[in-house]
Image (cartoon, rainbow, N blue to C red; front, side):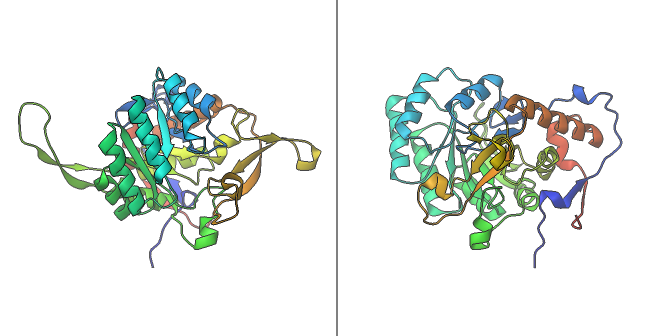
Length: 338
């Protein structure tokens, strides 16, 4: 029997530090050629990202992934109107309408930096075909997922994905584990993929020189199970390049999630539902998500990003680390009796 650990099972160990001020540390990350102000990403869900919020995040230097549940013609119009954005990042599925959307992007010659193939089970022939379809049509960073094993991530990378999204059934509104028994405890899932190096032949682009084999790792977005800022730190220690967060962003007062209030519900609540929920699907077939009502937090996205960055800076200081990319070298303990 294999043992796997969630973030709650992990305690990070402090080390000797010569860092005099944690505020001097840089919490920004470089991901697929672009630098972003934080490792955190609001999940590509209706409750956490919309057109307005995507624009705000891009202007502030944060990464985002627009969800795919708008009408694609509306997304295309929005992309055309916002070509001046620092980052244009969208999601697609794997069906005929998704391929037709890619065709329209090509036809209209619309600029896009990132396309995320967003499905529940990413280790699938339809994802393979969609990666190939996008790469044959566009020069763009392709993120694919979700997956939970190294074998799946390696296949997606070999098929042409530039990064993978890791996490199955670990979100607050996800019921996949309850419905199917499928799941990926996040710390183990991320570390099994992000920490594993493999050799790849890289061709030199300049000088006419032959290529060489290099040890590389697959860029990873850890998606799900974030409950505390410390979990973001643990995801980065596990080896994630970036960390996608759903419910905690949805709780923010300025999130796109609907707000309900009054004594009957115990104050202001945010309505949060999964992409595979009946609320999002509009029907009750093959539902693997639920709707939950969460206490609204008196905090904006900007304030939450700042709190996350401060937590990451503090973690780096405890570890005696000056560079965020060195966090995967931080020692940790397994603590399962919590």
